[in-house]
Each structure stands twice: as structure tokens, then as C-alpha cells.
Image (cartoon, rainbow, N blue to C red):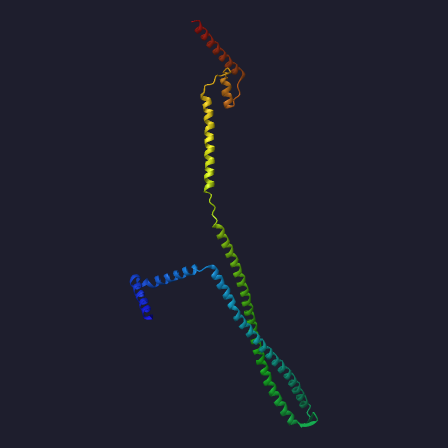
Length: 285
């Protein structure tokens, strides 16, 4: 089975090489990348949110391991601090004894008495030399221990800062997941509400019918007015003669001179008299 799969893969690779030539790798990698993106985009958001929550939960064991290491280092640092403190006290006492012996030797005495016992000058000098060598060795040890203590304290502070950063990041990730979950629920609500598509076709038909009725009534009203004008009703009033000068002046907004207006009136009177004479002659004939 494995051999068959291997042969199939080799055959596909050879075929791709023959079809695409030197660009075969680019085509294959691009296709694989697009397939991966499509598969990833097809995963539901709810599943990805559950995945993110599980990954956040998986941070807890690592955080607890770091907390355990920090607690252990804190104990070691405290022990080292106690050791350095005890050594400093011992060095202070040794320094006091060394200074005392040196002061006694500087007095020039041949014999010295300490704790009820008498010692020669050479014995005191030998003891002072031994005390001083041990003091120098212990003091050098103190310097090294203090250097180690400072380094471990710095490492402990860095570990605490890292742990605080991890705790802060985990809390922020939890908040981010909660916010994303709330946004996803809002999207789901919006998608659900958008599914309720109301059928307004009947409403549109009713509106069109009302518009058609309104148009028909408007047309009928206009036709009634036209029919009235075409009926040829008997005029009940005499036609009024309007002054052409007044009409021109009114149309163009001009002021009419009284003399010109009188002339227009006289012309109209004369025309009326001529028309009346013609009508009379016509009747006599």
C-alpha cells in the first residue's frame, strides 16, 4: 500500500514536471497553499473559538511549572542570602580579633594572656597570620557568593516579570475570546433576522391599482371639462371691448399717456360709429 502511494506521488510529480516544466514546484506549492486556505476558511468560527479557549486552558500547566520554578528559586535565593549574612557576621568577628591581636603585638610585649592562658610573642604572631589568611579566604568567598546572589536575584526578577507577562497575556486572550464570541453572536443574530424576507408583492400590486384608479378619475374629470366647453352654451353677457393700449401697457408694464389714451378711445368710438352706419345701410337696402 505504501509502495503504491509512493509510486502515485512520484508519477504525479513527474507528470507535473512534464506539463509545467521548471515552474512545477511553484504551481504545486501555490495549489497546496490555496487548498489549505480553503480548508481553513471552511472551518466554523465557533469551532475556532473553542479551539482558542482550549489553547488558553493549555497555558495553565506551563504557567504552573514556571510558578514552581520561581518558588524554588526564591527558596534558594533566601538560603544564599542567609549564608552570605552569616559569613558577613563571621568576617566581622574575625576582623575584630585580628585587629586586637595586631594591636597587642604592636605594644611590644613578649608574652600575652588570653582566656587565662599565657602565649609567647611568636605564638601570637603565628596565630595572627593564620587568622588573617582564613579571613582573606572567607572574604573572597563572600565576594563570590554576593556576585552569585546578585545574578540569581536578577534571574528571579526576570522570571517573575515573564510570569506576570504570561498571566497578563492569558487574561487578555480570555477577554479577546469573549469579545470575539459576543461579536459572533451579533453576526448570527443579524444573519437570522435577515432571513425574514417579507413578501411585499401584494402591497406593490395594491399601490399600482390605486395609482391606476387615481389616473382614470383624473382623466374623467378633464374629459368632463372638455365636454362642457364643446357643448356650445348660449352667452348671457355682452362681449366686452378692451382697449388695446391698455392691454399693451399692462403686458409690458408701461404707463399710458392720457392724451394717447384719449386718442385710442376716439379711434375706437369712430370705428364703432362707422360699423353702426354700415349696419344701418345694410338694413335699409
